Amino acid sequence: MKVGFKLALKARNFFFLAAWAGGCSGMVWAQPAPPASPPALVISLDDAERLAVEHNQTLRAQRLNIDQSKANEITAALKPNPVYTTVNEDFPVFNPSQLTFDNLRNNQEFLQSVSYTFERGGKREKRITVAQDTTDVTAKTVLDAERQLKFQVAQTFISVLLAKSNLDFAQQDLKDFSEVVDINKTRLDAGDISEADFLKIAIQKLQFEQDVSAAQVALVQGKAALRQLLGYDNVPENFDVIGDLAHKKFSIGQEELERQALLERPDYQAAVSNVRLAGDTVALAYGNRARDLTGEWEYKRNGPVNGVGFGFSIDLPIHNRNQGEIARSKVAATQATEVQAAARAGVLSDVINAYAGFKTNDQILTLYESGYLNQAQQSREISNYAYRKGAASLLDLLDAERSYRAIQLAYRQGLAAYMTSAEQINLVVGKKVLQ
Image (tube, rainbow, N blue to C red):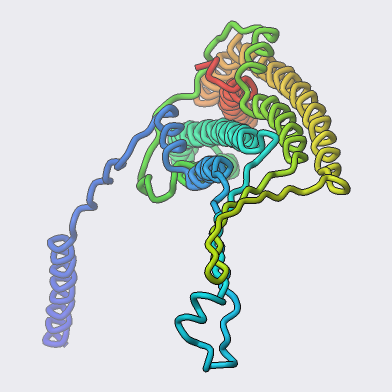
């Protein structure tokens, strides 16, 4: 029995030594976690807009429409080519005996002619004008696409700032509430609170953990959307943004915004240019009504006779006088005028709506900053202190935490909405008036 006990004891000691050695071995081979790599690129809102204008694939594709329109200008300016004609007749191929040099010299007919079409009615100049007008409209349409892209970038950039702010708040809130849970765990161990009260507090921690996860997902999705707008392959995956949600005060008037919008909005300017294009198209239709004159000079050898001649041809405008195209272009000109009027009304409506949203968001933030933020903070601190001292109930503590959390999230959302409405003012005006 003693020998067996000693063997068992030695075996157990050996097991403990082996386990300890294995643990030490694990400690020796374990490597510290590598530090998080810094972001490869940190961009501001101005940087984001610049990158989008330079690298956004959709905008770059639209810019090529300008080059295509300029190529059409070249086509419109081209003059007709001269036409060379040669006619050689009366070769006796079915009577080979007559295929002699004398016969070719005295009996065959050779005709060489050059003709050229002279455009009348100023067609070429009017074509050039219409092509240049089209390029102008195309360029302004591209500028409008750039205007809208900048707003999309700003809107998405602000969403990323909001996600970062919500994530920072959620992590800090989780940390603070975790301390509350730890304190109450100590109180539970000391018998100061019941297990039921502790479980209510511990379960409430789940909401804060969910807030962190939701903010992390929102940040990843927002950065992915921003990266797509900036040119996916031109921005590294681990890029970051710089900036803060802020409530900047601006002094602007609605009438001044309306005046600037009518001067700057590229979509409205494109509508104005479309009216000019339609008018020039009518002029081109009248120009095409004039019939072109084709002149011809020829050299003819008919047997032993050599001679030169000339002639011309012109359509007689008896039936086709381009009536249909003239009528169509006139209707299109009237339509362009109506579109311009609608575009003007749309610009003014956009300014009214954007200005109203901007002022409303400013008023909402002013309400938060007038005392509600401080009150929510103070209520949370007082409830926390009172609960620790036993002067407040668990329900009071949790209610103060929920109110503080809701106020902070709503305020951050209000800041993002205010900054977005400021960017919308820039959008409807067509240039940076609020920075």
